[in-house]
Amino acid sequence: MTKTKNALRRGFFDISSYSLKEICEEENLDYENQTVIRREVSPAGKSRAFINDTPVTLDVMRRIGSRLMDVSFTA
Image (cartoon, rainbow, N blue to C red; front, top):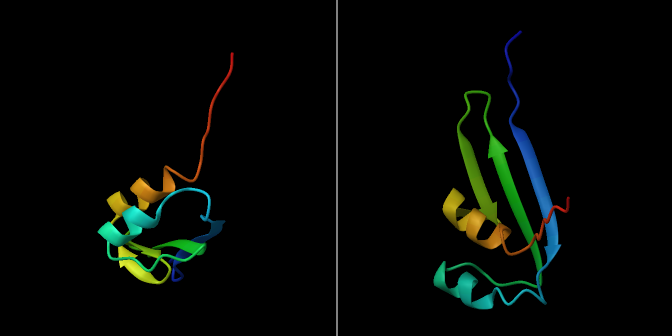
């Protein structure tokens, strides 16, 4: 069976309290309190990343995304 659809993951974030305006300006992204982060992966394995519908590199997505989550583990 051949895969024919892109995999799509999308997250909606209220970034108003995360101090991300400066990073958005550095990366030429429109700053919006309600931000959409999206990644599409084709059946061939190629991926595209977007922040508020603007294409970004995975490094930019990681830079912003890493500030939206705080995951800690306790023993």
